[in-house]
Image (cartoon, rainbow, N blue to C red; front, side, top):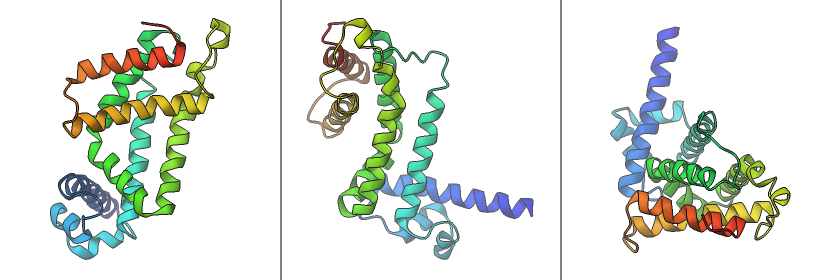
Length: 199
């Protein structure tokens, strides 16, 4: 029994890895299930033993991203006080690295959300949860005499939008920066935007 379960888990992982590769090469909308199974070296029918659809596979990849994000918060260097520019820099760097590493899946999620209202709701819920996870990082701003530019959720949404926008422009070749330059620029932009202070 154990070896059958291991083999099943191995096939599921192979399909996920292949999906990342196929999404990177062809985009989510153009990717076919047969492309994914071929890249995984598995029979086409084996896909349906693990996922009901390409969308369900993408939801599994999204869940993996959420789990990977949760692991980052266990880092002993994590600082949750956004009144400290070093804490903002830590989070910008972590998000930038995360987005670079998982770019094919994040792009696939964007594409799926454009054509599926149901998936758009899943993605919106994921974004809301991400922001809620770090809402406490700005909770004590009033005690420091600081006022966010909008509500907590809107202010954090703007922070993520700035990072995502710059990532996209660099990927598209519209802006040329090294990762370190981008992280430093974003840190200053986000810190100034959230606190009204220079860092």
